[in-house]
Length: 476
Image (cartoon, rainbow, N blue to C red; front, top):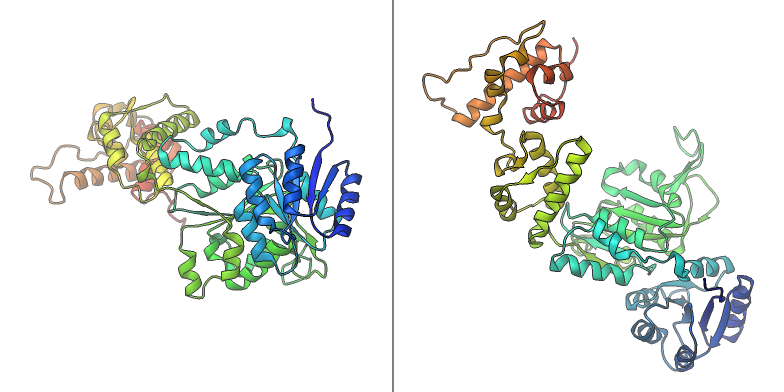
């Protein structure tokens, strides 16, 4: 095990500031070297190994961003953070885009410097040696778009820069956000996911920032906000476009200052979190329409990850389908099922406007409808195969409806004239009538109704939902 002390390169032309930081690092047990120009820093980098680098943006011979680019090219495993003076936020963001690990604002507080370097210097034994394994487990598929996505994640896994995820609905934005967290040095901290569109506007500030007891009606106790809950970890704001304008102002300050003030409090609380946001909407259009703040957009849109739609991922569709089949069958205690050739062809031709979420729902529905070992295209389309319909089950197994009570007889023979609504609609009506009779007979006891109909409870539940019968009638 390596017992060598960590060593940091400090690059700044303000000698007093360098000495102050050097003293702070010494108290942390970290050794440091000083450089006052970019050329001097490059020379020291060639001569010895550093665990991290901290550089000012304004240096006599060149700007700090050029040093960031140099280190990303020649020393990619050494994280570099930048020192940003007040008002240089745009320059700091450019440094993050160039590959900086993080930034720290002047005046530099000792606790802020300590937090930054604790995140930057990751001991070898706690690094993500199993990163490819984690990626493959979370991101299923080997298509070119997924290969590109994994490469992007490797580049940003150790940065503290805000990440903005775009993609169609259902492409897995929260999955990717969680993966970014798992691959980062914040993985032992909390991952707090918030859907901005799911929180009522009047509750938004309390949910995000918390409140003090008595600060408003029904505030019967102190409440910690979700942003503070993400301290030491990652905050994921899904559907960020749904955030009201007044909350966008408060969020911008929280992201920039890393401080929050709960409703009714006179005290600000320092919070350390990495923000990840996502939306399926076009924020640039919303900015033009005055519905989203441009300054917040630039602050969040530092590192961009664009998720490909499922229809562009080729054979990943089949790989994902098989994964979901295995996962769902295991959860439900069923034997694993296989896809027929027709099912394979159907999946490859389907548009998947709902992407991965739609595929999983489709597989779950197909397993519910499938009574044998193979899933065919007919189940993927959501149709009950006539060979396995409730009507035929009752006709061929009349004993399933016999117990102490009997389901009232329903005409099972084919109509003497062709049904006007077509065969499919006619069979669905017969099936619906049988379900209603079974539920009325069992006083809407679904478990008993499923038993009498000779089907699994899950299968009954799916059919009830299909016909809009999943809610019990109100008691009169």
